[in-house]
Length: 104
Image (cartoon, rainbow, N blue to C red; front, top):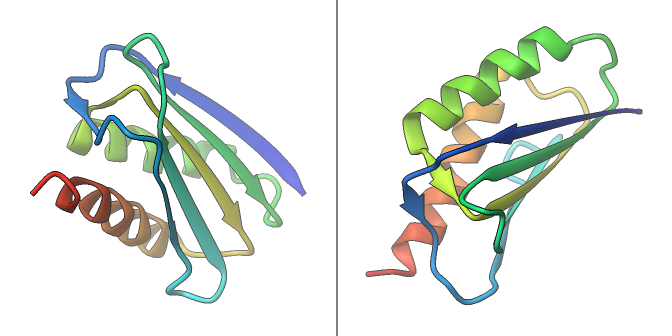
């Protein structure tokens, strides 16, 4: 297992203020957990993956995700067993949409 961590500063989109964890395991090989928590306006991401050596790919996926959502004060944990970048992006979007739906 390889662990990768990322921190994206200066987000502009807040998640619901109450602590909440959303898990998405729709693909059978990926779990995404998002929690709203104080991060000084940042979004932190920790990835645990069985597919070692794909740091550059993960970084590209996470940069794209951050540009799309601009989350602030969020902690994301990803448990991966070999999902493709497209599946990772889809599951991340689903998790955020679920969280933001709680605001409606």
